[in-house]
Image (cartoon, rainbow, N blue to C red):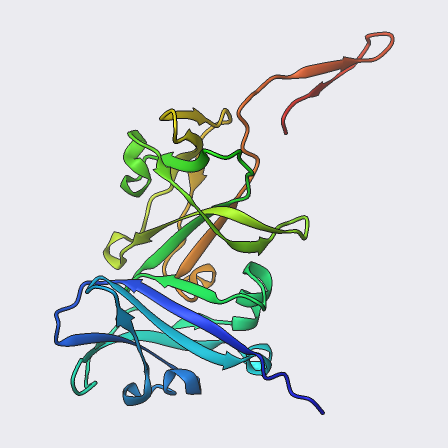
Length: 255
């Protein structure tokens, strides 16, 4: 019998400002995260005091066999690793097998962008654009430009699309803190940005509406709510196809 000893990497990321005598850790129910013992939790590092990352290595056979596990972020004293405080939100819960298989692939690292005590909202769209163009988002929420200026998106890792192809999608993340809940639904649109010319083409269909679920909902189990959008339409031309007798017609449009 040959065991699959391929090592997978999971990277936990969080933006949070801490004083120099405090560090951030990930503590959870599995061995790699200390089995809820803070002294054995995964300690995160930082490039500055605002951007934290902690990386966990785990054999593929355990990725495929693990049930969903729970975890939380915890602030500790830098010198002693003594606990200062846990997140006050309910335990985060994640199934790694599902994250690897449906969102990226078993040959890539998994990056989890989280918000302390809150939710990270990630907008995702597959929309190929020519060189020099970038997709952006604009909406009534301040995180989406407050209808004043579109927020540029970035190309993420390859994902499996609905057509079962491996493609890179446009992605944008923004944070919703615990004290912002409940969040009222708000309108938004996608925009094609021509960076060289400084111009923009807005999609022509009606405003999209973003409804953010409650923090405790199943769709936000580990603290990330993903919205997969599609059907960016820049033109609304409608063609009509008539029958020979012209007794009926069919309207053909971008949908």
